[in-house]
Image (tube, rainbow, N blue to C red):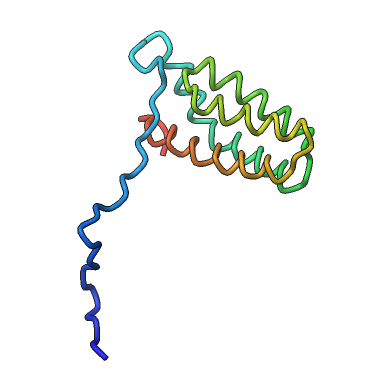
Length: 124
């Protein structure tokens, strides 16, 4: 049986590695008048997502729906339509009492929020 050396490069069969998701920028990124709003929104985003995750973990779909609703509006005002859509999905599932769907939507929202933070100069 052949031994593969440590650190060997894997053969991908000619396939390129999957493309990494691109950071998400605000639709208002080029508007200097919106920068303070965008900065404040993105800097607070991780904590808000943590709050959503806590509500979901405790099975509190009512609080999850309300927090998602607030995030939806603020994301829209800050120019993050993809995040707003994700928050709307969480809100809808939570309002309808569909816990498993709310969890899936929250996972997607978490991923989108990471891309928003990657696209923002003031958040790590």
